[in-house]
Amino acid sequence: MTTITRELINPNFYHVTEDMDYATLCKRINKFKHLYLSKGLQKGDNISIGTLTGNTNMIAGHFAAWELGLIPFILNNKILSGNTDFYIRALKFIMKLQDDHFDPFIRFNIIHDFNKPIDPNNSGGLTRMDLKNGLYRKIIEAFPKSSVIMTMEEIAPMPGTDIQPWEVTPEDNCIQYNEDLAKVTKISQAWWPKLYSHEQILDGVEKYISTFTQDSVAISRPLHHDFCIYYYFLPTLMTASKIHDLNVMDYHHRNDEQQILEFMTDYVNKEIERLGIERILVPDNETFDYMQSRKTKPFTNEVIFNIEKKIVKTH
Image (cartoon, rainbow, N blue to C red):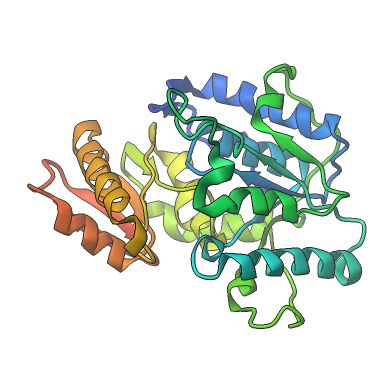
């Protein structure tokens, strides 16, 4: 396998949370491809898949992009903490800088589900756009006027048949990650994107996939880092047959959301036990330690926690 395509995914794939099998996921990938093409996206264009969890749209949206030679534009997870207004200004700055100096022919585009109600049953009209003081609305508004902005609802009427209008090679770029966004101290500071080819990402996968022998694995967050892709996301989809969407709330910067943090952490611990999850990714040691402190009893089975670049096994 020389490029990232659906053929990498375990054919026994089953997304437990959404009751979706491999064949249905492939149709979803096809729908995304048709939508991207209908909006005029071309090989080499950037695309951000804006969603808050490890759902099937997040999975299908990325694989559709990779099969078409689009370059997912990974929004650094640091944008979700700290000085939000500064990071939004930095995001606008790097888009303009890339347009002006890096490649003026590459457009920034996004498909998102931020317009979904926070609670479909009783949200009072509030959507995900309203979370974190309107952070996700600000992200959408940061994209240039030349951008194509799509919502997940638009994939529904698209054809479910595959389409492949051009060749994608191992040397083609497949990820743009903006690590330095978290390090920008001045909006005028020089910045360049960090790009990875299909070949580079798959070389990374080879280094880690041998440890993925578990059958029931949780995707605990959307793609937020280049390392996460080859260290966890792709190895999980290539090996596990039961995929769970289980969002882990990170421990940092949560003093004003303590009740939500406690509820979400307790919920995750209970779901790990109830669903028999064998492996899950958590963002850092502080989050792992907090999860352990909230447990009322050990897990029945051993659970592997991927924490940054290390693995911890615990009950």
